[in-house]
Image (cartoon, rainbow, N blue to C red):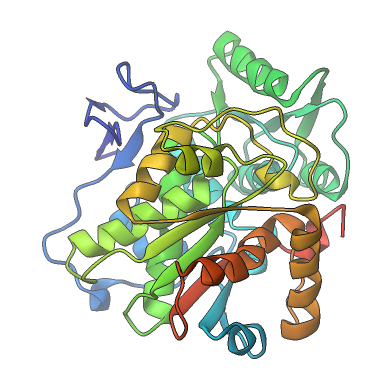
Length: 375
């Protein structure tokens, strides 16, 4: 496999490996980087879905369930009411119901090419369901380490794909520790971490590429995304940066972050002028997919926010649920509460003057409401 792994902060490089690596100096996960063929154009792209962007992805045999190619739906009521040109990228239309399919498809394809015999991750949510599905497609066993208290339809989805659930007592961090320890003991078990794998993140960059094409080969003024582990935020930032570096777009749009007030370490960092997320004791929130108090890519997220002149908003529980209901009733779009975070942030961003009247805004709706255990 061509390409290398790079630190997003200092440029340290390493050879691609199945094991997620961190920069020894910056202590952040490394990213995958591939040299793009000279002067590609949109007309050089082939097919549909995420593998349409194969020249930007690791050069491995594609693994697909038809992920990507999700609709960009113009807002008929919320946008006009808010005074902006608004469109929703409906990521719940992916095969397992969330944007995580983009990353899982690339990650499992790479691990399969590197000889993995089985894959493991720590997730009781959308990432676990996506990994189980693509592992099944690849013919690989999948083991998911989940908090002992985890429940709901996402666990049922994982087991439906044949994923093995290992319940770990204690806080969420214990599941991560257990997954890493198991992979360290068993060389045939690859740690398919959606939070630290460079291959998962590069799969999510295809979202930015699609938004560019959906809009007729241009970019919006703003994108607003929920932030938990930071995968979708960084995927968007890296994807648009790639298109800028190719000369396809003049600049990267402003990308804003939305978190629940119950767990807002990135919002607190930006507000306080800190380079790293401010770790906090999280409260329960309906936006369970974003309840990550100490994201492993958090420092990179904060750096990316500054680079793209992004803003960050913390939302209360009532605001999140009200936006979830409004999306369904006003736009016919049913999303899980985590996906509603970004929609809930819009009035605040407009009120601050971050988003101005008439600006064009795209919001990725990260997961289907059919996956939600709340709301």
